[in-house]
Length: 344
Ligand code: SF4
Ligand code: SF4
Image (cartoon, rainbow, N blue to C red; front, side):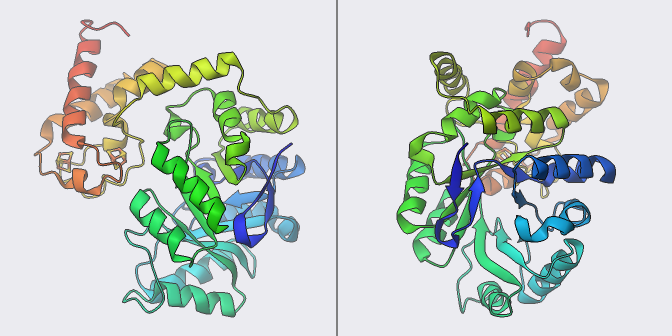
């Protein structure tokens, strides 16, 4: 089973981190089953965020008795130092702990630095001085902010999307982290659900080139947890079959495709569900299609017609996607599927 050293933090983890975002979608009881089963089977790295509703609370509830055996990373999306302290104190209370191992800025649109106007980085330093956090991290979807953070020397860890669909520039970012001894926490290794072969995803990240990458798997169900626990014991390797899966996915998802991150959504004046609608055809083709063709989802899709082409979403997309065009294309293809002109 593979281990990862998380850069200059020196934290050693099994190459299976637990991404606890989905804990907000399950009951307290089910969260307990999943978190305890993960811990009992050797997973010791748990990543959450203040923004994931009660995910922190569930970790505190079910893992506080083993707190000193695990690594907890959480995040603040605070924009001011005052809010930073409010978030930190809330996280410590809900996680029922007196320290956070890695406290991360949650996808800020810029790279916080000491002495800047926001006061955020100075607050981080003070929190570290007080022993409330051990290490300073940043998460991002923008390659520009990520590169700046790594090169700044100010961060112990970077959390960034990484999968076999990543670009060469993103692979270079992973190597840069290794050179600079910045821990790399890989999110979205299944690319928000577009990668459906978890063995291929795992085998790709388990290559020696990416031995500094600690993937966190967003786990919501016991069968998903079982898959990754199985890979701990018997790690899949890049067989010819899995390489074929990867090549096929790369061909199908080449170019600009929506990763479903949702960063463009809150400001859409037409309230379009962009994170699903802009990749609807891929979701239909790559997962059980019926769930996307319900009357409810048909209404969600038809709302694309209300797009005013204001372009706000385009400016928010970290992948430079021409979102309004992609939405229109998806609506046309969706309607063709509904009318039977296109067969899935
Ligand atoms: S261009 Fe359309 S989808 Fe994008 S923010 Fe404006 S109304 Fe919403
Ligand atoms: S269009 Fe861009 S910002 Fe919006 S959900 Fe897709 S990838 Fe994310």
